[in-house]
Image 1 (cartoon, rainbow, N blue to C red):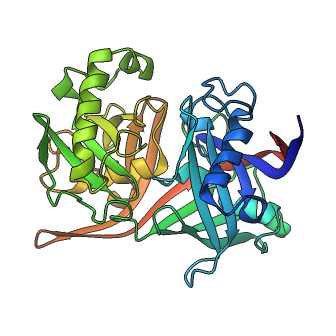
Image 2: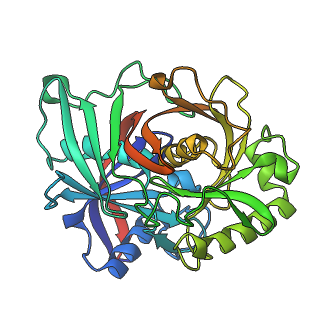
Length: 360
């Protein structure tokens, strides 16, 4: 079988892992591009949940792809298209961003010559093609080289690494058209109170207690609960049109986030369906949307979330393997909500680079 060689790099970004390509090395037509991506991740016969014939990691968190190029956007330096490979489904989704993979976009651009490095740090504005938002990313580059070693700790990731500061600009409503797509901080969907929100990630927040849960359940326990998953999927499918997302039966958004009172002194405890498996931690933009919902008067988080005494220190969103601190600029004035910059600290590491061989 003839094979085609495609230049690539593999990075860990935050608590995710994926393949990174220059846009110029992939077909421009989305259908052909997605076929190549599936071949790289799954090999012959896309749809294998093991991804044994490709480079995919057989989980949603390790079946991700970034396509990066120089940007022609007036407010950005780089363009970043995120592709989520639906494990076992043989398809690719562009319906969401990924903040974890975003953390490695500038390191990839520096390593591959798409963007010049400075010293001791390098900052670039990244245009998120999926939803149109912009993120200002700062990477440690002493001597003009990417530094991966450091003292920053990201729960859900072993060890420590150099901090990567990601400051999101204009996230609110980037996918659904409004921070609160339904126009309400609280809705009743399938006889359940929910908050539908989009501050970078379309999400439906629900109280764990409303499902007879404590919020301490492990991801495996939640995934094994068939009746819970069926009920949550009914809510997700009903919420899709309300959030201006249409039929979401084949989409990876909205995510579903079960919330409970914090256990470790944070803002709130979470268990996130993404959308059918449970995140071992929580996604970057999912944490941003969740924290934002907890600050909104009248949301489903009322009586559940515990606001910190010092908001300047950030909002700690607890998850199954630790916590995720989000910094938010948010004001509520005369019933209207204004969202400014949303900041997070991530880490990344270059894992491999070379050529991935795909069936011709």
